[in-house]
Every structure is written in structure tokens, then in C-alpha cells.
Length: 27
Image (cartoon, rainbow, N blue to C red):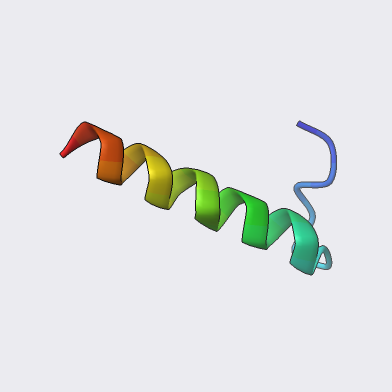
């Protein structure tokens, strides 16, 4: 997954959204 640098607000937001979605779907 390219763009996993801490200087990428877009990537961070995408990761956060993906994690939230996975957690919501898992629970």
C-alpha cells in the first residue's frame, strides 16, 4: 500500500476509515 507515510493526511484518513469499517463490520 503506497502512501503509508505520516506526511500523508489522505492516506491516514483512508486507513482510519478502513479500520472503522472493518471494526464495525466485525462487531
